[in-house]
Length: 199
Image 1 (tube, helix red, strand yellow):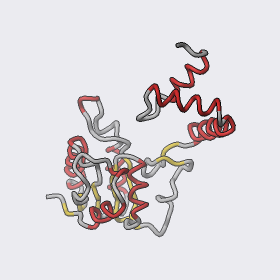
Image 2 (cartoon, helix red, strand yellow):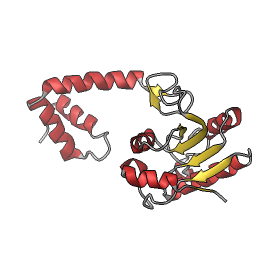
Image 3 (spheres, one colour):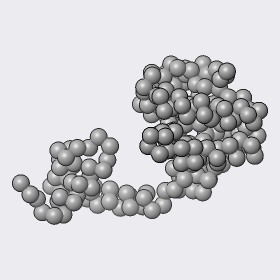
Image 4 (cartoon, one colour):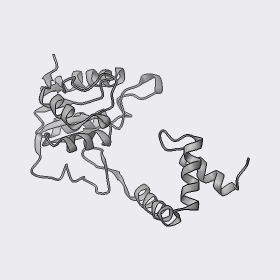
């Protein structure tokens, strides 16, 4: 059965979200149209604002409405410790764990030559410039414990160690193949406190 063109467009638009298939998108569309148009309008307004006003922090590359995000501009953070993560969701996971007081660098992905994602695409040049130009004394690698995450960590280790900076890797209390943003706070805090230098 075909719906009106606008309903079809709404369903297709909702399918861009991760984990949302055709049936879920259809349910969401009908819910907004049948029961909650006011919330749908608010969602549309906030979505438009976020998509036009949220960019990347100039220092760490996390998502931010400001040129420099709140973490990077916080003078109480330890500027000597730089934690490297794959996504803004990973920053949120560490912040919720509450045990890390340094700063971050968000790669916005990981190395994946098969997908055409190399060091330039994930900002490793900017990372190395930041390490070189700042007071960073330790780089903590917190990439996901996947094949791509490990390859990314290895590549960064080689580049950063050549600049005389200590490199450590979070402990593997985080399950292999897992995603940091879905790990509970206790496990994440344990993994961070149990980090070790990369040999």
